[in-house]
Length: 195
Image: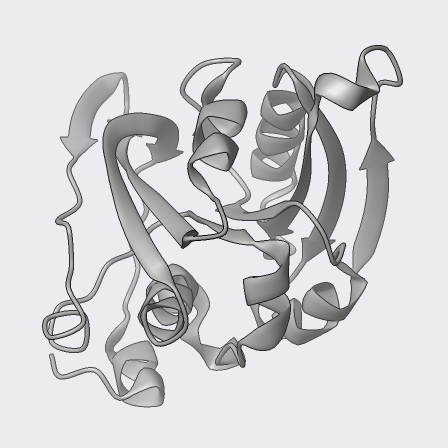
C-alpha cells in the first residue's frame, strides 16, 4: 500500500480535509496517473492520497484520517470538474454520513451517463451498484468493509452506512469513469447480494 500527501498550505482553513483511497490493481499504472492528476486538480480541499489494492482496503482504513471525508475512487476514474470533490465532500455532514453520485462512462470517445438510483434500506440488498463513494471519516473507520467485494466496495460501504447514518444520492455527474469489463459474480456471492 502506498501513501502520498498532496496538500497546499494556502488558505488551509477554508479547505475541506479529504482522504482519497485510490483502489489500484498493479497492471493499471496509466489509470493511477490519470486519477492522481485529477485529484491534484481539485480545488478547495486539503488532500491525503492512499493507494491500495481492493483487498488491502482494511489497511487503508487504518491509515486514513479520523476527521474529514473519505472518497473511495478507482484508478482510471477522474473527477468531472475541478470542484467535484469539494461539492461531494460538502454533502457529507453529521446527519448524512455517506454520499454517492452519478457518473459518465467513457468508452472510445463515447460518453454514457451512469445514473444511479436513490436506494433505500429495503432495496439496497437486492439491487447492486458499482460506484465511487464519499463517507465521513468517522463512519468509514467504524464499518467493516468486505475486502473481497472489489468492484462492489462502494455498494458494501453504502449498505453498511445505511445501518448507522443517512445516505444521500447526489443526482449529478461527479466522475468520469472508463468503460470496464468486469465479472462480479464472485463478489455478489461474497457480499451476500442476490443476483
